Image (cartoon, rainbow, N blue to C red; front, side):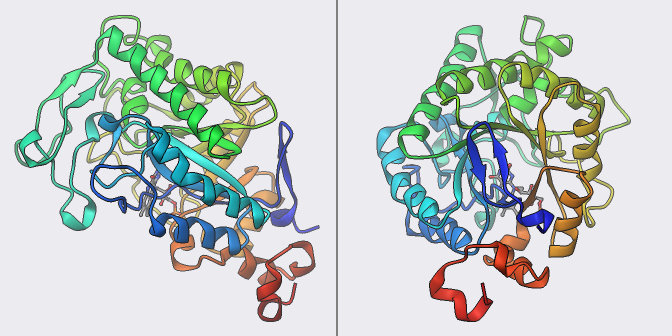
Length: 366
Ligand SMILES: Cc1cc2nc3c(=O)[nH]c(=O)nc-3n(C[C@H](O)[C@H](O)[C@H](O)COP(=O)(O)O)c2cc1C
C-alpha cells in the first residue's frame, strides 16, 4: 500500500489517508456574526470531495474577543455551531474526517481582514477589547489599541470558553478538535518568554508559561469523547535565536506534557510571535525537521503532523514512507488544488487505494 494512502488510526478514529487540509482563515463571515456561510461550506466540502483524509476548519474563535477580524468564523454560540453541522455531515459523507481548529487570537485580535489592509481596529472602528498575557500590544507600525493583561479570573474564563466551544463542536459533528497554540496567538503568547512577562503562576518558568495551554488542552480533552483525537498546533520555534524565546527543545518538552493531558497529535508549525519571527526561507518541507524532532525526541507516544511547503504527491508520500511524520498537512497547495489528494493518488499510481466520489470516477480512474 502507498504510504500516503494508508489509514491513520488515532484512538478509535480512522483517518482514511495521510492528507489533512491545513486550517486556513477565510475571513468570510458576515461581519461580526461568526456564522459559516456558503463560502465555508464550499471551501471545506470541496476539499473533502477532493479526497483529503481530514478537513480542518480555519481558526474558529472560542469567544468574540478571540477573533482576528470581524469576519472570522466563531463557535461561541449555538447558532454558529448549527451552521457548521451540515458541513461536517457532508464531509463525513465523502469518507473524510471533519476537524475544527479552536482558537483565540490574543493580542493579534481586532484587525481588518487582509484584503482590507489588516489594520488594527479600535473600538470606534468596529473593533473590540484586545487581551494578552501581558499589557504590551502587537508592535503595529502605527498606534494600536491597547492590550489588556488578562487577570486570573479572565484566564479561567478563557479555559471555559475553549471547553464550551469543544462541546458545541462535538454537537456540530466534528471528530477532531485542534487547539491552536501557534502563530503568536493567545496560547502561544503565554508559552513564549518574548510575550509573557507575568509573575504569577501563568508566567515565569516553562511550567508557568505553558500552564494555560496544558489547562486548555485538558479542558477540551475532558469534553471530547475518548474515541476521538485531540490535536494541538504549536509553533515549534519562535525563530528568534538572538533573544530568549520559544525553542524546539521547549516544544519537545511540551509535547510530552500535552500527551499527559490527553493530546494525540502535535501539528508542528512555526513562528508568528513577533513581526520578525519568520523562517529564513520557507522552501519545501521547511518545518518538517521540527516535526521529526518532536516525533523522535518526545518520550510520549504522540503522533506528529508536518506542515509547511508540502506541495507534491511524491514529497508528501516520502514524508510518511520514511517515518518522518504521521500526517502531512497541506495548506496553500489545497487552495490551488482542492483535489490534491485525488491528483496524488493518480500520480502515485494508487487510484485503487482511494474511494473517490463515483461522480468523478471517469476523470480519475479509481
Ligand atoms: C490563507 C491562509 C490562512 C491561514 N489561516 C490559518 C489558520 O486559521 N490557522 C492556522 O493555524 N494556520 C493558518 N495558516 C497557516 C497554514 O495553515 C499553514 O500552516 C501554512 O500556510 C504553511 O503551510 P503551506 O506551505 O502548506 O501553505 C493560514 C495560511 C494561509 C495561506
